[in-house]
Length: 149
Image (cartoon, rainbow, N blue to C red; front, top):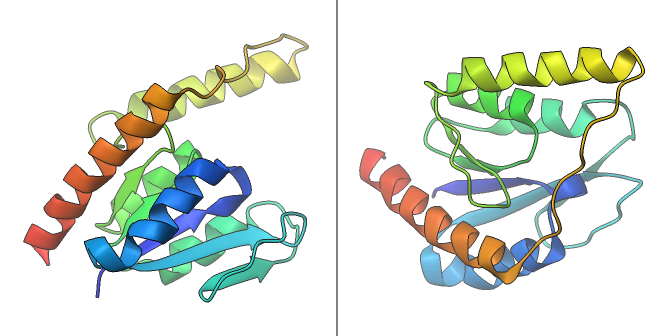
């Protein structure tokens, strides 16, 4: 069965509820992964030590071609795409191989700017439109993943 993996440390609760409530209806196994700093519970929840990248490493090691990963982490998304799986952000942005080099370069530039004392804007406040965009994009990605399996 198709598996959906969630980087649960940074996933909004509304998205988690959507994924949990629709897993049977839409036909996928849902796995959530978080550090022990973000205790979540569920039948298929994995908790890792609060080490840097621990969640990302577990997901990257478990994902199979055709699976879907929900993450805000561009680096994890790049790894997932390299494993022939799909990645989507909680705001409904579907990561693709053609955009990834630009996104990783942008991430690198912003990190260097912050290390040098610069400031960058944080994410915009979450809206109902973000939830609706995620749901539409997720269902589209689910169809795409199923057609490939």
